[in-house]
Image 1 (tube, chains in turn orange, green):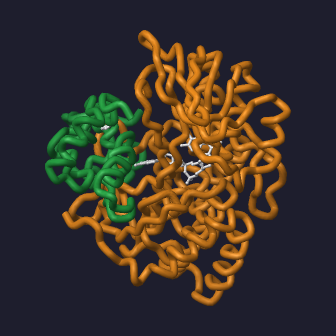
Image 2 (spheres, chains in turn red, orange):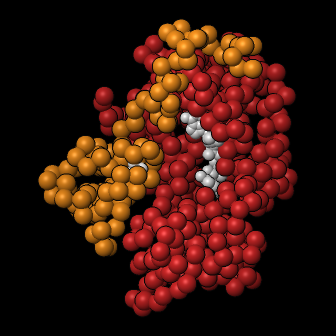
Image 3 (spheres, rainbow over the protein chains, first blue to last red):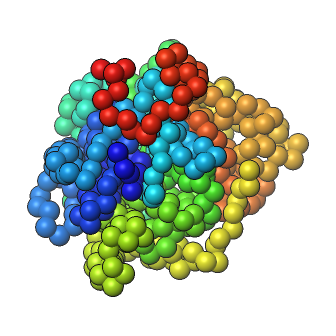
Amino acid sequence: MNIDLLVVGGGPAGLMAALEAAEYGVNVAIVEESSRLGGQLRQQTQYLSPLPSGIGEIRGFELANELVEAVTFNKHIVTYTNHTVIGLYEDGSVGINNGKEIIRCETKKISVATGADIQGVLFPGWTLPGVLTVGAAQILVNRERVKPGNEAFIVGSSDFSIEVALQLYDVGINVLGIVETETSLHDRKQENLYRLKEKNIPILENSYIEQAKGRGQVEKVILNQNGNKEEYDVDLICVDGGLNPVIELCQLYNCSFAFNEILGGWLPTYQANFETSTDGVFIAGNTAGITNQGAVMVTGKLAGLGAAESLGNVPEQAADVWRNNYWSELAKLENYQVNEARTCHIQNFETSKTKVYET
Amino acid sequence: MDKSTIVCRCEEINVDEIETVLKMGAETFDDVKRITRCGMGPCQAKMCVKHVSNLISEYTGKPLAEIPPARARMPLKITRMRVLAGTESHASTVKAVFEEGDPDEK
Ligand SMILES: Cc1cc2nc3c(=O)[nH]c(=O)nc-3n(C[C@H](O)[C@H](O)[C@H](O)COP(=O)(O)OP(=O)(O)OC[C@H]3O[C@@H](n4cnc5c(N)ncnc54)[C@H](O)[C@@H]3O)c2cc1C
Ligand code: FES
């Protein structure tokens, strides 16, 4: 098989990048480490909003199914699940582990759409069983159908953890509260805050977990709220220490990096076509900055278009027209601050070419 | 925070041990890693890099933007030695890219 574009990661960003490039006749291979395509959408049972124009009301896993179907029936795209990219060889080929051996793949362009890692939160006792990230709790409940506990605290009040709190409530877990160190909850989705009220789940501002205790698993938690300590009986603590782009593969490609707090920390620098400082290496989705699912899809399109253009499959002028459309869509979909940070990150592409690591 | 709080759960390194190497002059995650093994466990630093960076930032007063992330190296993910070496029948052969209809696959 002749590969023009290798897409690493079969989440919404990778799938959109593949579909977009295939529109222009690019031969794409998608490699996905897990046994199924769809990425983190697979366990998202909530209705997604906002989404790119033309997509109606849909839940995360349903959207995943639609994208997977589109990719599966596309004659320009082949997909490989249970295939993990583990690195690069000196000759530039990509090492892919299929469980039996390492396949060396040669490709003209690559699009890295490896998503984000959820970070934990440090407190004494955080390594006890019963402390999970909100993402892990969501996977257990929505995908594996396992109820991870009965009495829970959520730590961190991002929209994501609020959504998970609501989903835990729906399967009969008593959520005692959402612990938040900050005191102002700007920028949260209003409807989510409303649904929390409806279900009587309080957001405990100016508070943090002092300690989790238990023999062999979480049994008690000491909560510090406004300086007052109180002990609660809980068997589940779901923590959200924020999302960070997964950048390892870009490190191997010696891309240059810049730190951007709003986009999730360290991430490769890139241009308006989502190409990094290393020729032929594009990034998409949360790897290119943490944002919402709708925006993740559009970044996939941009990376796919960029790759197709650089392969000579789209004339420059046409590519520019589409790119401008996608960029305006991106600006509509994502949070204003995130879009501003992204624009800034791209404007700094030339100046921020500081290579942080040399091997 | 209690100094005995674990920071790197794979290698069981606590706050106290990290602070000790910071006192010795460690400035980056990789410095801490080389001295303590923090970050060298099965998760390959995925779970501890941010905590360590926060500790470095608190200790040195440097913003996070000046603390580089952990250096990634091949293999990026846990890989069986047998797979890295190649299976017996394929030992030392470089497999054609995504060869279709490989009998071993069936
Ligand atoms: C557990 C979890 C739950 C989430 N739930 C929500 C939510 O409810 N609401 C919300 O707004 N956001 C949520 N997010 C954020 C989520 O990241 C985005 O919604 C969206 O899925 C990002 O899309 P993506 O394509 O960038 O990454 P992903 O969907 O994460 O896709 C990346 C894919 O790349 C694959 N991959 C990674 N490395 C390799 C490799 N080396 N080789 C091969 N394949 C690889 C992964 O297996 C994965 O399938 C969640 C994140 C996580 C981690
Ligand atoms: S937590 Fe440090 S290596 Fe896994």
